[in-house]
Image 1: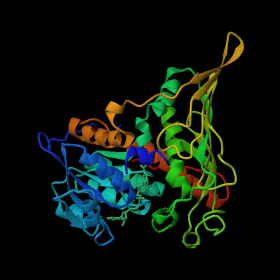
Image 2 (image 1 turned 45 degrees about the vertical axis):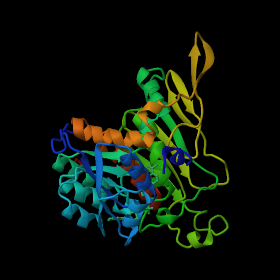
Image 3 (image 1 turned 30 degrees about the horizontal axis):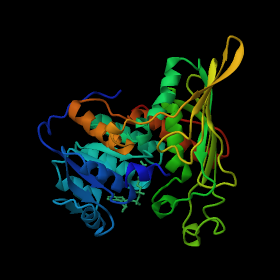
Length: 382
Ligand SMILES: NC(=O)c1ccc[n+]([C@@H]2O[C@H](COP(=O)([O-])OP(=O)(O)OC[C@H]3O[C@@H](n4cnc5c(N)ncnc54)[C@H](O)[C@@H]3O)[C@@H](O)[C@H]2O)c1
């Protein structure tokens, strides 16, 4: 799976010495759909050797590596067998479904292996806290797989906020989704995904805006989830509808530290084309970011900055910027930046300390929805 395909839809600084002058030894845990994007990137990197792969489904990892023409890989029936048999691994890509993100990541960190963990970080806040604690104890590097961080337009949003052009950001409306776009496979069941649209695409919208405003801590949330489409054979393939038991729509009102309000909604299916653009309301200006189906790559079009100039209300269009092709695709940059951070002793490109807040909002929405009222978001010390 290439970037082109994908676009359709302070922790301590450490220095690795293990691999200096040698190829980095990488393992892949979970050889499903997203692992394709990982292997495609690793294959282009001369300083990387993929030495091991694990999948719960017998024969799947072997067939996967055969398909990609990667030789010399050792295969294992689960992540633990692989981690125990491969003490020389420098890093693993955790490409499993959400339910096993936490156990695979913690088991790898506990064995001194650096981890690139696919998004969303996990399912619950408790798991996210356990992951962060394992990372801290291990002294290893953990980065979470949000490739949109490498998109120049996403970076532009953060640059605009940091320039002070908006003044104080006090309210953010964000979200996204599609009229019909319910995935299938392991995305739609509690036992594998644990969260639906909220975890799959909601985490991207949250990361876009929270990263832009410096990842303030979430304080309270009033959340709502529903599933009027996924389990209904009128709107979903009947074979998938009977399995479907996660959310396909979520909405929330979140209070963030610093007095910022986050108004959020996300949908895999609805009777409208979009739940609206993302807008950052500031005391000096506002920024409108056109919606996309899924914020997993870039923004939906030219952004607009609204502000008063000499007493006149003005609108400035901020054109779409082109990513530098010399840097490779967003996915390649996500993987390269992770490996470079390990080799050069730099901080994680997408640190768990930030994504912990992303996960706490997601989990808070689920818990608030179940409770039927606003709840406090409690995040223990790491
Ligand atoms: N960054 C992106 O753009 C992007 C895109 C798609 C999916 N994802 C994320 O990637 C993750 C995987 O999605 P997918 O579509 O590849 O799922 P998938 O179901 O196709 O593949 C997951 C694989 O992990 C294996 N697995 C589960 N637990 C395991 C364990 N303990 N040890 C070894 N193997 C194990 C399963 O058998 C399965 O083959 C999800 O969390 C998803 O949100 C990210």
